[in-house]
Image (cartoon, rainbow, N blue to C red):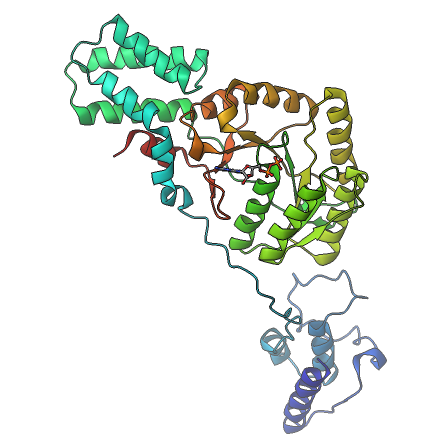
Length: 409
Ligand code: GDP
């Protein structure tokens, strides 16, 4: 860095000499502050005045240039002066995850295979020449079997009945369009499905990384999802710190670290069976000191006593909030568990404010209707779906792509 600074100084000195100005080659630390009368040509009004004691290389250059007295042109010079880049970390063999855009479309074949019986089943039934009561009952059964839930099923069947009646004769294309529209209405296209990873503000108004807590019962795919989500964020250009707060399962901690190592994300771990809240706290602390964009915290999911879970998760969140807000609490649910998943969702929602749902193992079940049921149950959107065990088999949930996979083009 010194060489670069020296180079800048020499360049400036040369410039100053050419223009006949007095120069000084003293280092920054010995420099007096710029005279108050100096017009602030070097800094646009928006330049922050805070943090003056923590000078950056750019400050150092600016001060040196000010010192040599370059007039108005100094402002331009400062802006264009070469800035010493922070030292690039040595590149370990880190994987580059594939971009997340269009992932659901890529995984569509997998989705449509598993959801075949729902979408295609409905279309076949609706295409029957006579839509008698038995057929409507079959339609209802198809939706219930796919875990759409009683209330949403009744609503959908009612709307379909009404619209089919209005339509009169039905071509396959018309039916498909109608079903697509109604399924989309049921799932909802308005909800904000972005995982909130925006920076928060600390107690003193300072920026802290976005904090995401991942909760769910063991076995749902919580740790895998946390790892996959780290990849999604890294693919989107963010730096991530992982908090292995599931301290009761050594395997989970190692598993998470492996995920982190693969994409160059540090994993904060604690002693085995240590306090999960303290690991969570430390991971955000690490995120802050690293200047990371996001901290992902994997939590324990032992559901043996609700009170224990409540105490633990509540504490994790409260302790993390000493640093600043938790931007997102993602509940991981296994799509293959059907109604049981809904019971879990209810319990977790009582313990912490869930802000989004990740539905895993959607590749292995035809019960995609759980998306509708769980959104109704919790009043929060499904934000991500797991479509396989592969590292990049986690996709942002896009209702349109999902419904298209359901009923085919
Ligand atoms: P945890 O106990 O909730 O942390 O669960 P794990 O993350 O250890 O995952 C349990 C199992 O589910 C692992 O074998 C994962 O590979 C598997 N799994 C996770 N997500 C998916 C998914 O979307 N599809 C499939 N097929 N398997 C998944």
